[in-house]
Length: 262
Image (cartoon, rainbow, N blue to C red; front, side, top):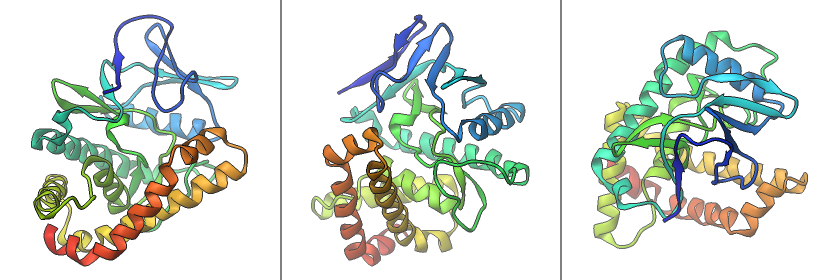
C-alpha cells in the first residue's frame, strides 16, 4: 500500500500522480500552473466564499506555479487499504460529491465565456464536474472522505457524468463471479442512493460511463501524441488498455448492471 502522508512539515515533495512536480511549502501546496489554472482558482474562490470547507483555498499564480492551501489528512494510491471497501467509506464519498455538486451548481451562472478548461464541457450542463473524483484525489480523516483536491480536470457537465466516473473509481465493475458482482452492484446502488440520484439517471449510468471512459481514452491519446510525457507514461503503464478493456466489459454487461442497481 502506497500512502501519501500529509503532515505539517515544510518544503516536502508530495508523491502521487506527478512525481517531482508537487510540493508542500510551509502551509501551501505548490503545483504546476496550466492555461486553465486561472479558471480553477476563480472556481475555488467561489466555493470558499460560499462556505466550502472541503476544498483548497487558492492563493495565486506565480509564473509557472500555482499555490493553494494544504489540507490535513491522508490520501491513498493503489492498492487501497481495506477501509475503501467498507460501506461507511462509500457513503462518505457519495455525500462529499453531493455537497460539492450542490455548491458547484451555483457557479454555472458565474462561468465566464473566456474560461479555459482542461476537459471540454459536456451537455447538459448542470454542475461543475470535478472530473476525477477518486480516492487519490480525496482527503481521508477518521476513515471518512472529508475533502477534495486536484481540480485541474474541472469542467461544466451533468451530475451523472461526474457520478458515473466517481463510481468507476470507488466501486469495481470487474466480474469476479456472481457473489462479487452482486456485492459491487450493492455498493454502486449504495453510492447512487446516498447521492440521491434519480432512477432515470440510474438507467443512463453505464451508457454515460462508457462515453466518459471513451472521452478519457481519446484525451490520453491526443495528449501523448502532443508530447505530454505524463500521459505517455500512463499509456506505457497500461492505463489506456485497462480503460479500453473496461469499456468492452461495460458494453457487454450494460443491461445486467442496470437491472442490478435499480
